[in-house]
Length: 300
Ligand code: G3I
Image (cartoon, rainbow, N blue to C red):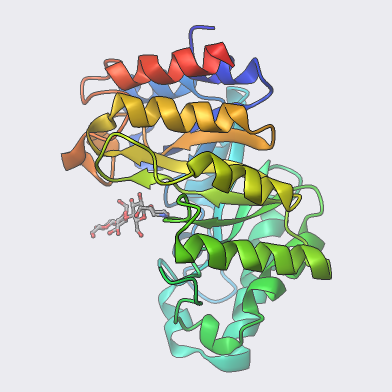
């Protein structure tokens, strides 16, 4: 196949990108995005600060702009994200304890009701762990250690049709403390019947030419717990072709690795634009890393 999405679909997977609503009017951007990808994540537009700027007053204008753009082209959508320590609405800042807990529950219910039955995945909770595998301190964590499972139980009840994911960065190296901390949480959730369907490894790689230690083992180990895995926010310093090839190959080697999403279209669209980390250059031209990914997808 000659596009990333079609090549991934050959093995039943998807290949996605993050989209910023404000860039959709750029025809180079939207042409590449609509041609190459078959899964779309809103880069910022479905986060809590965007969707519930005032308590109980939901705003889906930007999120829907992306949702409609994607679905009009037959592309699927990953929801990102419902509960996170960052990009919270400012009014969460004056809440704590049971009132913040209730605000989180109400937020999940409000956003998921709007998108009920429409999305393929939701990143229910994002980035809740420290590098050593302990829980990250945050206002949400301070509502009680069970806040993550409450978020997932709320999400399952709100929309039983969408797959519910935990999403984080620096959980690619199997030997790393954070990877093990997240692994233990998923293992615990599975053993106690807390609803969870997938783990998203953000896959923001910095430097080097080889993959973080035993990357494929991390994917297969999570999968062995009974969850899907996905690479959800891929970008790589200077778009190292060997790292892009390797991460794609690792996903293809693991049956429950369901898809790969790169975190932006062109280098100039990236939050790391000074590192040229994506598959298209600022002019919209395919880079060498694009070919290494496409070939790995086609070989699977
Ligand atoms: O839209 C406002 C604009 O109105 C305002 O004038 C301007 C001034 O700062 O800010 C604009 O918002 C920025 C927003 O991106 C949209 O461009 C925010 O400042 C900026 O902080 C925000 O950055 C986003 C970042 O998440 C925030 O945490 C990046 O675009 C986005 O790529 C990044 O994505 C995260 C994932 O959600 C989670 N994993 C890590 C990843 C990279 O940081």
